[in-house]
Length: 293
Image (tube, rainbow, N blue to C red):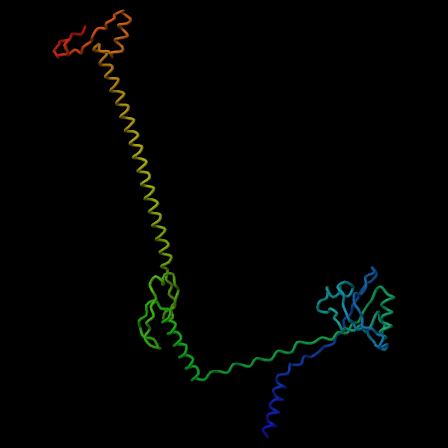
């Protein structure tokens, strides 16, 4: 009994695993070909030496170039394939020898070709999904709630409350939370500290650049001020020198080299000694009253 059951069970598996049979359809296709330019058909037919009574020409091979390959390129859905059979040529039906003779003696050819193609199997209707029972829905809701709580504990920034599976002790460092997107208690929370830090860095760099530029301008102003003071000091020294020269000239006190030049012009070998107005020949000071005329 068990042996009979096993054999029947194996046969049922083989029967169920067999491929779904596809239906076939046969159709007649008409071709109009013009071989007046000397172009050949571009196909090879099966040899008819073994069967002279064949009532068709069966296509055995298609070449890349020819009348029939060109027709196939323009009619993809009705293209001729291997094993398609030409059953009539220019209205003539007969053996394969007769059909070959008609093809050889005519430039314009009208073929009736019998094609057998497989149809796509019909789609199996999809069975409706079985509705869940009340207990299954409750179980699914419980599992979803646990998964949500667990994910909130894993991704939350600073969670210390108890979860369904126990207290959550996971806490990420604060420096790792910047710019993170996480989900907590079903609400999406996006931290944007990363963008704020970037903006703050840009502002700090800008302030540093402004401060450096200000220092550079102050340094340039100080250098320019020092140059102006030096020029003014030189100018004051020149003015003082001019005033001293003018004062000595007004009192008749000329430089020594000027007095020597005048003595040489007058022929004096010993130039007259010139003393300041407040000294005598001994070099001692004395008070002298000067009159100007």
